Length: 126
Image 1 (cartoon, rainbow, N blue to C red):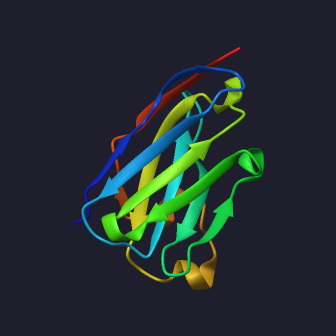
Image 2 (cartoon, rainbow, N blue to C red):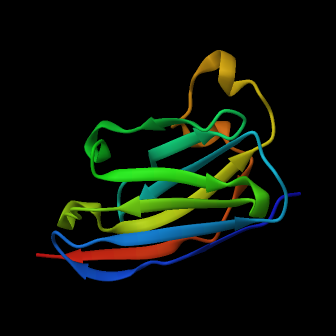
């Protein structure tokens, strides 16, 4: 069992920045950020293979968001810049200890991750 705890959400104006953190109770092979707005499906935002720090991003956030890790402290980050109102959502941290993502490459599919945090709300106003 891996416990995940997100923090860092809040309310900002469009164009602003936020940094999300996710503290994990143990190491994982893959970690990712997902988001979900009311009435919408959960969508992948960014993922990282912790072994090599290789990152993967969804098209809507490329160039604006950066996923990173602190392996020594089992902490995941998401730096979000140039925020837009459409980025408003509950953001979830996810983790998986298996390596199958290296083969199926479904890095931003929610059903590939076993462990989930409770989420942190991000609200961007125009």
